Image (cartoon, rainbow, N blue to C red; front, side, top):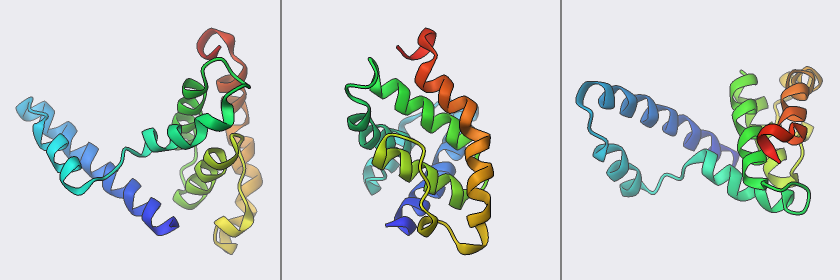
Length: 134
């Protein structure tokens, strides 16, 4: 499962990067759509929001926007792929930032605490800043 998620994320980065170049050069978006539909590659952010939102219902007025915000900050802030995937998994499964030690290699488990410190402020902004999320 973890390998499937990682390969989906890597593939989507290549697809989005290639499609951005194609849009700039050719202003043509059809290959991105047909390529995705051809191989049934899900949108990682959309899939994350779909899994996360049910955990947010009842807590927040706009669960999809809170989940999308959490995804965007985690993806932008956590540079290490293993820690980022573990964090996204924890959020999508529980609705709160969580990383289980079994989800990251032993050599990176000491980085779990600093990862939470790094995302603490953006997480609170996503969840409690009424101007954008409530």
